[in-house]
Image (tube, rainbow, N blue to C red; front, side):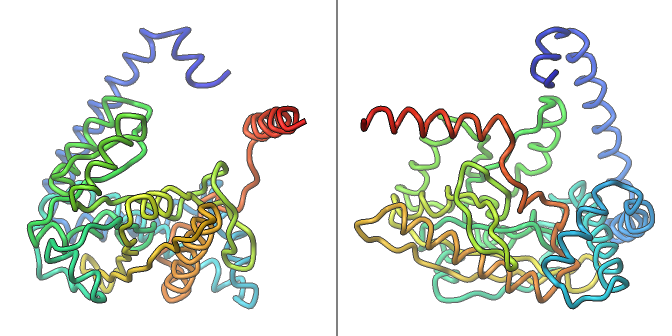
Length: 321
């Protein structure tokens, strides 16, 4: 039985569970904010490096790494994935301090091309697309500190109480609003871009309803939304990455790409999405221990999605006779 069905069947139990989880998360935020960010990041990182390999996702990460770097030794792969866990532990701790980190410019070094600099100056509407490497939450820091309001798009948590806590932590990052996916969000997104604003979203998540693009020698499912929005709004995409240089210090980089605009809309979106992943792959190769290898990036669609796709394809075939 799915979570949604269980929730409909036992609404009071799920409501109580959500409230309890929200309380626990609020307590965790309070306690972690009592610890200086450098110490919290260090301790959480080392804890995750030590204990996270017992998680089933550790094996998945090792398998993905083996496909991506076949010449890498088993020992190197193990150390790389443990480095990934350490980085993720640091990200978890730093999230509780994110509003404070936002103000600490000495921790950040920002570099970018001409389009990126125009965005930083508030003179260029664009879609800022990051990926899960370093501390990706802080990719917007240089933009925010220049006074540019950013509108963010995110996947809401299933627990509304926990989601409320996360939104509160991120509110200073996205002064233009933090939008959960949905019809209302789509209208606000288009309004943001048409008014010359900056829209931020992640670009490396698996999306089985998207397209397949080459990624580390295999075809991977990719989200076409950034390329589709950029093409329809006639704005560039600025790809952003955060490199953890040492401890809680970062280098934030930006590289712009332009979405093709030919008579074949789908081919244009496919080409831009493939180009995004080509750049992501190059960046990941520089610091593989900082990317989230636990993603199911190369997994095939689930049965329910395949069934829906087959039904649509059959309907289209029947319509065209």
